[in-house]
Image (cartoon, rainbow, N blue to C red; front, top):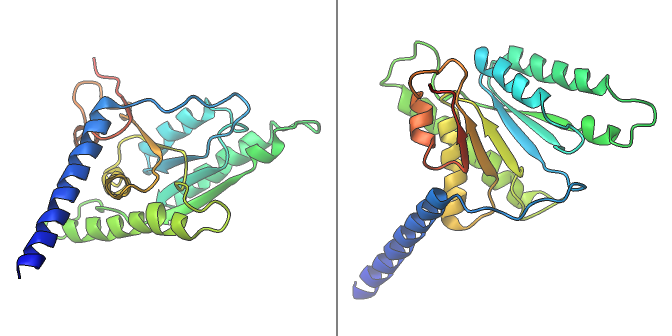
Length: 221
């Protein structure tokens, strides 16, 4: 019995120490080495439907698709409109390719991934924890399980950079990434951009995520 208590206390101390170390590093927002101009950066962006998707498309249109490649669009289940907008954006970028464009391959490299919604519109609050947990499990599979067993680049995060702009499903996604950091697995850098509609107050997602993401931006007056 004494050995079991000792093992439990040691494990608990390790987890608490690791947790506070991860939070401390999040507060410091330590810089990672700068990439060379010739290096690419794999990118994921969460499309949260409606205005969030439109704003995310505006953010993406300002990026160089040949450098931010491959791209992963994360959409909620049942959100066909966001999927269509992502494909339309990719087709629009591919139309800019010239016959002698050396960066054509990077511009055509993208994929769509779906996760359950954390909470549906008008969903009762009593059932929200169950759908949020279901979403969290799907996010763990996306950011932890799949990268561990991929054959092309094992041991690397599912992307280098994750951009989000406000929808509530961002919270379980970031929680899954923080779980990876807690256990010492590779994780992407997280950038949170507050929705353009928020000019006076920060959204609930923003208040939750502002202390754990690597970079956060808002348009508050």
